[in-house]
Image (tube, rainbow, N blue to C red; front, side, top):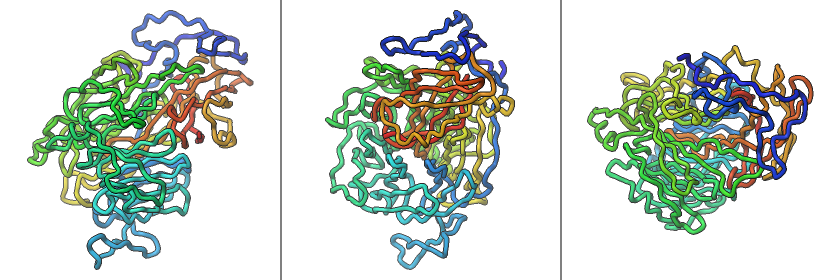
Length: 579
């Protein structure tokens, strides 16, 4: 089978070009005004809406930074088109000094100073790298963006465990730190933005609770956290429930997955409103380190009372993998994937299998509605030298295809990316890939997998040069719209080099860039917006009337990347803000 032969066959629907095509009926519900041919090809699951362009392109890699100075344990994309990459202050000298002779004191070692940067800001436009100053230790910390686009970053190790840090994405900004803001030590915890613009932090080592991040400059009282039985019940001798997977559901509840169990939690009552079936096979959380993401949330002009949400959990480790890795015994990782509709009354896991086992990988929402799995290894667990057989090939997942046909391996990298590696989706649709340090300090010699300071970009299938000119181009200055209000209608103009009869294949996606660390992209969210009207303005130029998300429960306030999609080809994204 050719690499991308799984896309649907080319079908044609007819309507008059440049006419106004309303795709809602009288009561506002979506309809398809075009007659769709009967689909008999089993590959054409989803019909015309998934009639992607044909291409044999399986992706390409490019090295963009030979030495970033810092190994990227954590990664975050700012709305200013700058990318933050940072690790820990405990790993010794990096390869980029602090500017202007600055140094930081070393905790508990008053006679020592650290004059090396442990965080950098990479400018996507200019390519410049700027070193930043961190005082408290960010090792295995968490984060999310504020409604104003400020990174709010919590926890870590040692003196960083109770810290809350703030960073803006400007050319001269540096960290603001509050070392004792949290009630408990949050090391390997997960953070989620809430509809009101606040944040809640779950778990951490021997922290079987959650707490809210206080306003900047404030401090949570000691023991003000709320116990969560799930976290205590799912811990084991290997602590296989760290970095729990946390997702804000469209019903306002919080989905929490730890080890192999999951719940829906009502934060207003602090009550568990639903417990889901066990996801069998092994551990999905650190140090088992599987992956999780929500699939695209599909919005309509008139939405149902509860908008369906599906969560995907893939890979991970066998329960004793961490302990056996200490003895240089590397168990095969898990190759299973579970998908569950968390808003369904009787939700059950639908199981599938990846092309190969995978642990310590990153799972990203692509601007096409697909999922990308990248980085990781085939054996072992998270930890220093605790994994073998790097998994070099990204894997594409198409949720609309039948079981057994959803996965496809793409062009492999030549750089192993295992423990402490990261990846993120960029506005142009490429994937930034960085990090990997399986050592307890920066180590470039005498080890099998040296500390990795190189940074790459991966171009997925839709970056095929042959079809690059077919991609839509947004022509509206979306920044001029100001802040979007929930439920408002707004116009998006775009151009394509050829006219289209496939109006039902034009989509608009809104993507919340995450805070990524340890294989989990916290606060990642992608929405397929409701398109009310499609207008042909002139040959090759079109206008969409689009509905903003209906509420902050569906789309927490903040900055999102918006792109127009046609036949699987995404435009370059533009930043929009919603509040």
